[in-house]
View 1 (cartoon, rainbow, N blue to C red):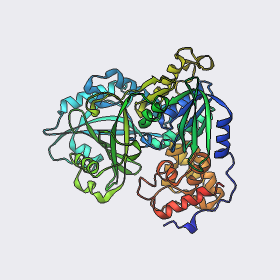
View 2 (view 1 turned 90 degrees about the vertical axis):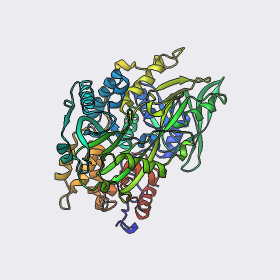
View 3 (view 1 turned 45 degrees about the vertical axis):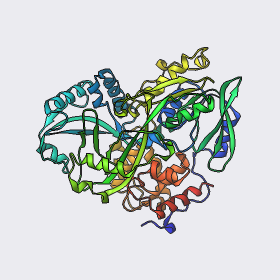
View 4 (view 1 turned 135 degrees about the horizontal axis):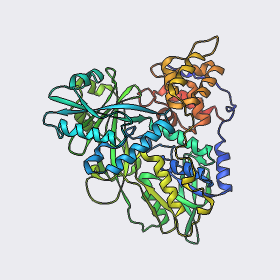
Length: 536
C-alpha cells in the first residue's frame, strides 16, 4: 500500500508549460471585457466555450466546482443513438444521435471512446418479444447506415459466452446492437483543454456571488475563488447560464420573479467489481419505456440507472438505499446473484437530468436542449444528451448569431465556416500509443506495466507520452498510486500542472479512476493532497 513516505517529492518548481496560477488567471479574467462569459463547467458550457472560441470570440468559462464536477461526470458513460427513442417514433432524432456518436467515436475522440456490443435479453413474459426487438435493433443499425454492423438476434448460449453472468432461465433469445462508451469526466476535461487551445480562459472552483448589470442588462458576474476566498469580477458583452440543475437559481439572480423553467430527474448508478470477464454489455428492458444497463467499464461493472423526479437541492443529490435496492433488483432480471452481491459495490453516484418544465413521467420526457433569453439579456441553456454535446455547442452559437441587434454576430466566424469534426487534443490510435509506451520505456529501468500503458492510452491519447516523460525523469512518479489500480503518480502531477486539479477529489474522482474503484483510501488521499500542495 502507498504510504506518505513513498509519495514522490517534486520540489516547488512547476512543470514546463504548466498552467498559469489561479491568481494570474483571476487577474486576466478581471482585466478584460469578454465577448462571452459562460457560467457552468459541465459539458454544455464547455462545448459552447469551445465552439465560441473557435469562432473567434473572446471567451471566459467559470464553474463553482470542478469541471464536469456534477451531472456531466455522473452519466451512464454512453455515446449512443438512443434505442428506446424508436418506441416513440423519433426516427430523425435517433439518426442525428448516431451521426454525432460516430463523429465523436471515430473522428473527434477515438482515443477516448470505445465501441461496445450490447445484448438485449428477451425473457418469457417480458415487455417485448424477440421479433419486435430483432426488428428494432435492425432498424437501429439501419439508422446508423449499418456502420457498426447489422442488428440481429443470437441464441442464449452464444450470448452467455460473452456475458458469463447472464441469467438464462426463461431466456428465449438475445438481440444485438452496438453503441460506444467513454469516461465522461476525461472527455469533458479534454474538451476544456480544446477550448483553452482555441483561446478560452477558464477557472474552476470560482462561484458566482452576483451578476453585474449595465442599464438593466446582464454584463458580467461577481465571483469568489473557493480556494482562497479571493473576490473578483468578470465583464462580458453576453453571459450564458449553463449551470445545469442550478439554471433557475442563476435566472433568479437576473430576475427574482423568474418562473421555474426546468424540472429534474435523478439517475443513480452503482459500480461493482466484476466476478468474471465481460465482453459485452446488457441492456435489459424493464417495461415498455425503461431499460436497465449492465456495462463493463474501467475493469468494473456499471449498473443503472434510475429515473425519478427530484425536487431537492441539487447539491444534496445522492444514492439512497432505495436507489441501490432498485438497481440491484432490476439488474437481477438478467444477471446472476453472485455478480450482484453488495460486497462487490465499490462506489455509487447520482446525477440530475435537466428536463423541460411540464407535467408527465420523467422517463418519457424528451432529452431536448432549450435556450432561453431572460429579462436582462442573459441566455440560459439547459437539457440535452452527452452524445450530442458538439451539436449543442453549435446550436447555442447559432442562437447567439441570431440575437436581436446581432451583438456578437459581426465578431463571430459562422458555424458553417468552421471544421465540422475538429478533433480533441491527444487524438491518436490508442493501440498504437499503448504499444509505444510499452517499447519506449526508460533504459536502464523497468518498463511500463501493460495495464498502465493501456490505461494512459485510452484516457489521454498521445498526451500519454507527456506523462511517460514525467515518469522517466522522476522514477518515483512511475510508481502506482495504489497497487490495485493502473494509475501512476505522474498522472497526479500532470493533473495538477496541466488539468486544473485543485483538490484530491478532482484527481481521485475525475482525472483518475481511483475513487470509482473504491481505492481512494485515506493514505492515498493524503498522498495526493501532498503532491497537489507542491505546486506552491
